[in-house]
Length: 328
Image 1 (cartoon, rainbow, N blue to C red):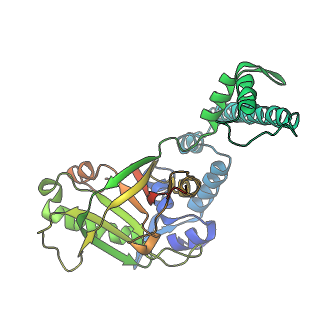
Image 2 (image 1 turned 90 degrees about the vertical axis):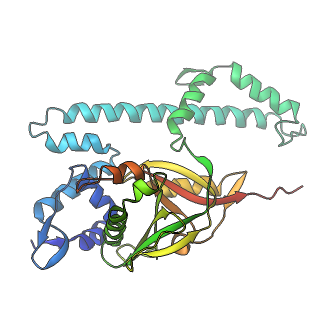
Image 3 (image 1 turned 135 degrees about the vertical axis):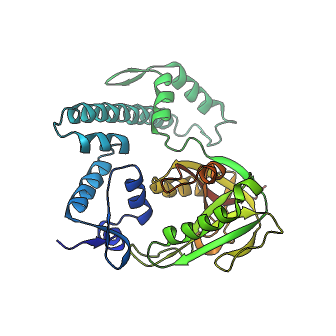
């Protein structure tokens, strides 16, 4: 088997180059270098290992446990890990069953009141308030007795995005590093890192922040795209030719924190915003991701202790928003 480039792997397995790099950072995957080629390549063993990682991720096995499984030559811990995940799935199944039971009970109560002028406004209709009150005080008969405390626990289990915050990002002057082509994040990041380290930006501006976004975003899997990094800088700072000085308008954003590599959480995060009663998506500059950004958390610490192994552990996914107009 011939060596595969990171772009070929990304297209063939429908996985982002950032995720591949993160798998390497945490020791799940290894790559090599090919003569006269600047980027990562993968041999047959690495490709086979990636296939195993993808299968285990589809089975919802956490990355830390995948690391244990792949290192477990004697297979002494694999059964234990699988049983632990089966128990987690059982809890989720129980949670779904509980919610299904409550909905069935609710529908039954409503059906019994057809023709009694039942309104949809729960806060103004005493009949429906009585139904809700009875649910909170009764047991739910579905394979076993369950109370509304169980329903609350079920919601905790099934709610994946618990930490969405609403915040204001202040306007700022930024140093921009932008690259379109193979491994755009790597190239753009190196340029930014070289600039920040050359001027000791973390000392000059200890409150520096680092943002990133696709620019342009790929329309199809494996398509060439670009990535742009921003680092906030003092307004009067000069930048080299490899860096472009820009102004960030700031504004209101919804934020959701992820561990590096969990970029699949963009989709449910967007859905939460689209379904929100109080805020709506507010497309704006920079247009690469319609105004959405990825903030690399703890930029000061990253640069203060910078070395070849430095890595960003967490990101804030940022979606531009505005309050919904209330219809009277």
